[in-house]
Image 1: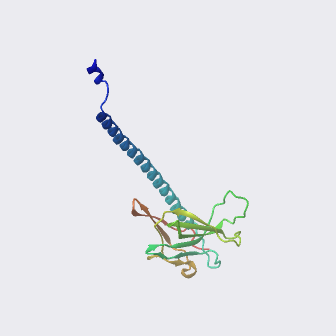
Image 2: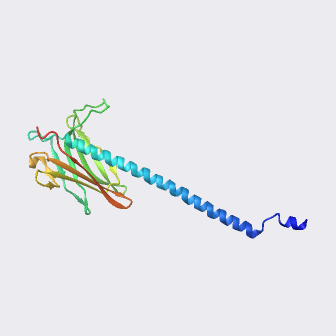
Image 3: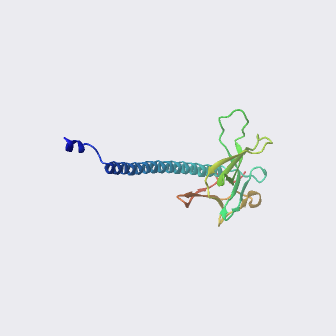
Length: 207
């Protein structure tokens, strides 16, 4: 009887080994679970960034395609300024373009707006800022600025004059819209710079 009773329990060493193995297993499962969660969060953030980037480039393409310029009306203009922010391309783009009507009926809309894109610092990160003003019904208040795209490294706008690409343009000086527009946006992906670009051509050459 005494021999059987002695075999029913565990020794202290066996208990310590079991606890140690359980701790190792729990640590491995804990690390794997949170690794998967972080990977899913990064993937979702990357998809959202790509969606935002695609929407921004498509918006600029459509706005330039509908750009308006007139020699007799200085309000209809197109200006690109080549700027540099600590070695990083930081162009500004301002143009007059046709705009679809919104659902808001509280304010008047002419269907023609002036849009401006520029780089700005936000929370120690670069962002692409968009400003819009109606050409006819805009009030005297300052144009509100909205972050069109965040976490952007560089913004470069180039204009094609028929023979070469240039980084500056002023319709008041050039007397016309560019024949083509190339917009390049640089973002960081996994610590590496990645560039995306879009080409656009105007549908209306001048008024």
